[in-house]
Length: 149
Ligand code: ASC
Image 1 (cartoon, rainbow, N blue to C red):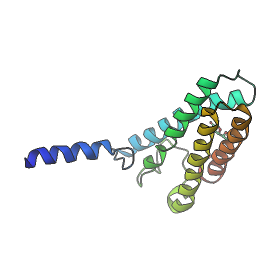
Image 2: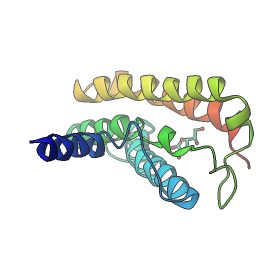
Image 3: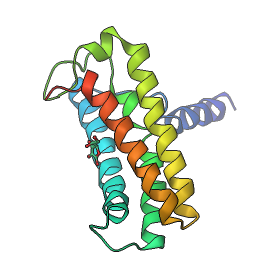
Image 4: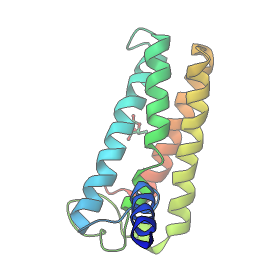
């Protein structure tokens, strides 16, 4: 019985991984956040290309891509762990010295991607366009302060 409870607890904790991500080594944390940001950017970029007319508007693809981007935007932040400021990363030390501002800007990206996902789900290209602009601005705001060139 005790063992079963322990096993269930262990399972519950492992399922909570994205929110309380633990990494075996700093390189894993770096890879984790870069991977999440890459998948996020790929999906956002697909919608952005439609918004700018570089790609034909496909409502279904736009909705799916925006939804994936919005979901992915929840993940990278857990990868900015204390020991992962050094290594193969463009993350600036300011992330760790000014974490509150970094977290704020990260939340803004998530909020704007959520709005984009709503617009894309509604199939409204006229609403998608400004939402894409707002996401791009939110990305840039964070990069300006916290990503090395
Ligand atoms: C993207 C992408 C970024 C942002 C940034 C916005 O599509 O990959 O990093 O938008 O260029 O300024």
